[in-house]
Image (cartoon, rainbow, N blue to C red; front, side, top):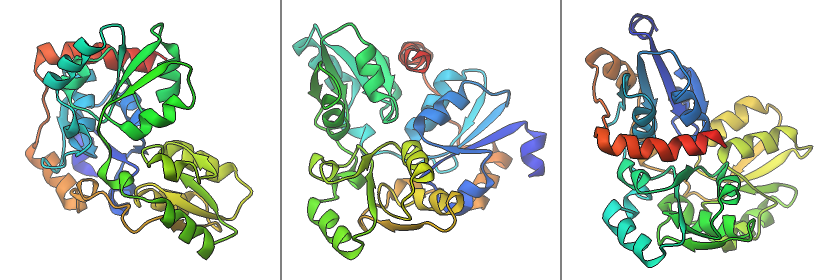
Length: 292
């Protein structure tokens, strides 16, 4: 893309983006991979094909770069279930607890947290802390998953990903009945009743890795349908079934065409900026995560 080269831009796309968006990206990955890359590149412009908290994270670690989000209204309902004011109040209830905030949160919430995490490293982040109690914000399902893998007391926030949270155990049973020789792999944002029935629980990158290394030929995938594109692309010959028809995130589909990416580069908008005071506080939490 000539314009991308002229502007020294890099295009980052989340694994849940539409196939055509993933195919034009320089890198496609999960939140942790993209956060790392956002902090380790020589581009002047970062075009983030994802949702707002992801672009904000890129802006937090790159104050001197231009960060573009082609669909300015691509929000995250999970991130919106926690706000800084409510977190400050909750911290007063648990003054001895460390605050771990899932990267799916606003810059303001990150600024009030001790450290960030992603689904890929949440357990490692929690176990790295000296505190015995952890206030985990904002995903209750990921908090439940982490609680299974730590001796620390996990205090969950009352939030959830509306896409993953709607999956139910009966859907897993139906999928297994329809495809008895398929392996069930789900994301930890799914409810505990779904996680209990899975053969493997992992982040999107973890799912990609598991499928690639597995001798199985058929898989039931319990995460947003966008991941199927990479799974099929990287594993020709293997067969994939989506666990639930409800596993579609409308916000991840708001970047609906390559033209929107081109328009963002041409107009240098919409830009994502973070207030400097908030950015510096949030940066500390993000950097602590990236250091682990």
